Image (cartoon, rainbow, N blue to C red; front, side):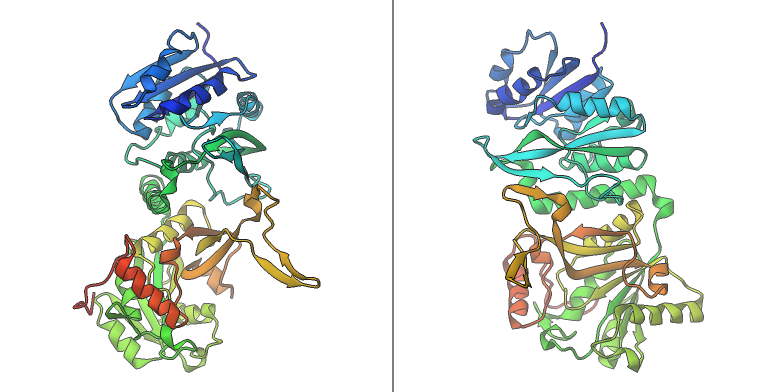
Length: 468
């Protein structure tokens, strides 16, 4: 029997009501050189009833197993696959009739490409198009490759995926992010700017849990660096910039938040970072320096008087510390992670994720951001004009806007030495709104108190804790 060109596989767990649509979208493909593997991953709904009608189909293989999770099912599928190319289709999504033709043609004609992915539609449970997601063009609009392809409906060369170790079974979601890091480390990605699949959003979608997504991506990046890039991991200096007096009095170092000074929140989380090589506080204020030096492992450097004004440039403050370290100790880190006390809700994990992003994406700088989903305007000659126009229902990744939240600013030392704060290649980490709050006024301080007191997943400090 001649092996097909493409294997499509559907991992299905309690999505029986969608299977007719997803399987039907494979059966109606304009390309016929395919096989379909459907894995019933321990479903307790009517999945088996829905699959029964396809049991005799010559191009469909059905696998029934106890519930083992998405990534285990993915690995089972790629081991069973006989196609040169493989593509996952989630049980609640469905395909444009031309997707297999288009994506496989790219892999046929571009031997240096390891995976290819299209734009896509987002639909609701009534299959009404809510958005069209247009991806940046790899190589032309995106060189840093820190915006991964959607995990579903990305076509991959099967032999390369197996050589990369398949899917990591340590994680229960974000398999696409794991796939992206493994494949793009060795092989070129390619994207087709045509929407070719329908991604269904509904109340039970796994991807609705934003915190889980971001935490899992952080764990995937950490494992990837440990497994593949440990010798490239930079030596990073943590630098806390704290002035005794601020133009925003509510953001001064000893303002109390949840029973601890603002400075405590930054120092306590920075100390828990696994990836900072050293941690230094730069300040002109003796009280700040004394408080900081009482933390085990924290060094306190007195700042020059010329760098204490509100207009002092951050890169100049960083360079003063770097020059002192170089002169007195011969110590030169590969990068500096700058932290400010007015963003007290950042966690140690955010610091480490930024360092991993610097390593993986070969970036010059990494900043922490929130994606700005609201319409933004700028005043022009005739009044307000949109600066992130969405073209009706069309959302363009290339027009997405990100708001820096000031929580993380990481740059390589040679960037700072050149007199710049940001290098040419700037990657990012996304933080949630409740982690991104910057203290400027009484309202911000009140909101931070409420988040630490009541918000799920927040980390309120113990009130009897003063150091370390």
